[in-house]
Image 1 (spheres, helix red, strand yellow):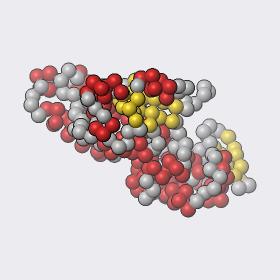
Image 2 (cartoon, one colour; image 1 turned 120 degrees about the horizontal axis):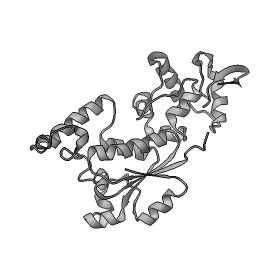
Image 3 (cartoon, each protein chain N blue to C red; image 1 turned 135 degrees about the vertical axis):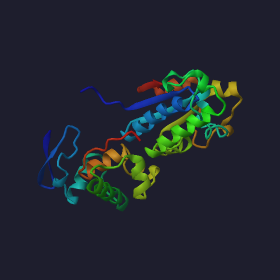
Image 4 (tube, each protein chain N blue to C red; image 1 turned 90 degrees about the vertical axis):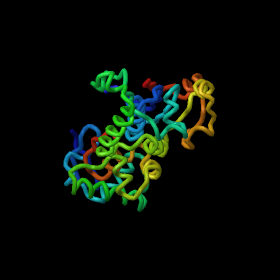
Length: 155
Length: 105
């Protein structure tokens, strides 16, 4: 048996529902196994920790082959909302929490939550725009220092 | 699969140290299992969680995941991780002599 994983640092770079959840589940799952975890939100991933947007994350309804939905259908007005509500209902039945609650829970497990400095500069965001659970806004170099000695997972 | 001794009795555990036969567990074994996992002293709060895990196993056939544990045991997530630093559902299950819960949340 090889050595157990001791630390994971997970990058969340997408802003869609299906782009954000995997990273959160990885982080929460790591903590449940006693593995140290960090979450680093960059680019559209910042939406997951943005006060303004974290309650409005949607499923990508166009250009998303995994949905098995015709592009023309996915482009109809209201489709993202419809699909998101459908997904959220299904996830609710499995007791998968909505993104804001999930992130709060992950913060309670002791995981570190970080925003990407460069992306914050790009979108004009400061720490005040991000939810309280965010540990800090860091650069990519600082992220590498944080992640040292552990695994890095890019989502 | 191995045999270990807790409280003077031999019990069977799997590779990760979880009881293969939960019926072999007694409450007196819990402090010894906890100590082996780095928890030197079980407080009332610890016991609240351990007893709850056992109850869930007895009624539902499996221990709860961390989220379910926090929601129904009355102990919030933050405190669970303070009581059982290396993974509450996993650790509490081991100390309670029940199999490791299988869940992703």
